[in-house]
Length: 494
Image (cartoon, rainbow, N blue to C red; front, top):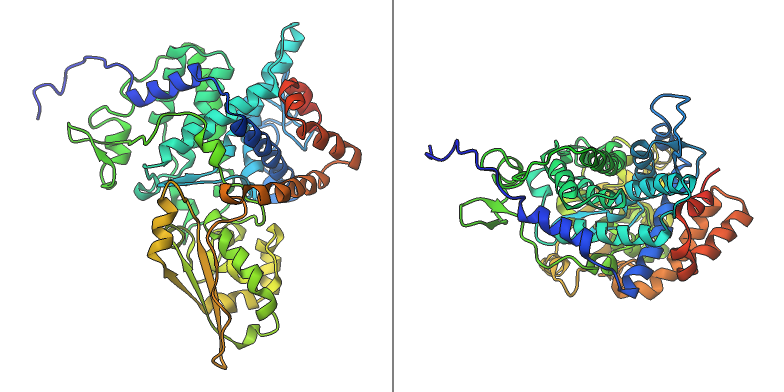
């Protein structure tokens, strides 16, 4: 044992924490592309939340923890009449946004959904704006929300470029908590020391395991885990602003820090520090890269590694729909991450299990020509045994090129290919889709469809007149950015 193990020399804050704090407090966003993309991200994220309100399994989680609670200047939950404290409002917004697995995605060494952070951002911004207006002060504007979104995307996304959390069994919502903590603390007026304190608590918190995302335990917690994480970010920011001391060595403390306890033991791909401790590798400084390159889920409410498989299946549908019972095998050629995360054989237990199954998400559009959220539900699955019949005929094959180009910075493809073989010896052509519609390489095509998705989602909750008002505002970048947050949220509540 080292003779210095009991030295009580309190360190400076870990550099990773300092870099995040300095970025959030000092960086000024000037990228028109980032701001324009953030506007579309805001529209799409809120629209996904509205669509989720059609599902009782989601809405049962919403509302105050104590029925009848009245919260002064309570944050609103879009699509509802709830006015809640900012922590619970963040939970509810985040739950709705993520429920159908339809909001944006970021794929790298780790993946996740950076717009999950909107739960905390919007709840805090709405509460503070109402409070400020009541005091005769200037409210926050939607530009403040967009800036916070860009920064949250950047923190979550840059950390994942070369650091895999899933390989050590940790869920990516850890990074939602970290990013939400940082940007919400800033919105709440934190200084550097308070922000560092909040971030340190985010890392020493208990972290979610990925158990609920994988066979045989996949379940609906994956649909509310991000809401839980973004709300925890709001709570930790509040704790820090009340003067709670931080934990400077949250990451690097020998034996007790995040790296040694949760990150080093099996993550051999991580960079090794001189003292022998594995640590995060940050590939680039924080800026606006992630928002500019974020992936939108445009066509299908499906885990993103399967988006191109779904698209290929839709293409093949006209050739196979009348020959489903003549199929001998279906070969899905894919990338390693898809195999590791969403390839499943055997019985699927629930809707959350199905929307993270590559075979299920391919079988449905092959048979029916599309994939919508209702097709994951128990009653639809039970009524259509052809889905499981097709799943049983699927073979999953890795293409090393697909795996390699998934990680290449200038490509970031998410490729899948499908070929169907029939019992008479004939087959379809192999249909290859390397980039989904929501990818930056297909951004122009995707934006048109994203706007259609937004209008459709609005119409599930609001009158035609209200929908038109929201669309008109959201289509005007300058007007939207200057709108007070409380007035913006007014348009989204019942």
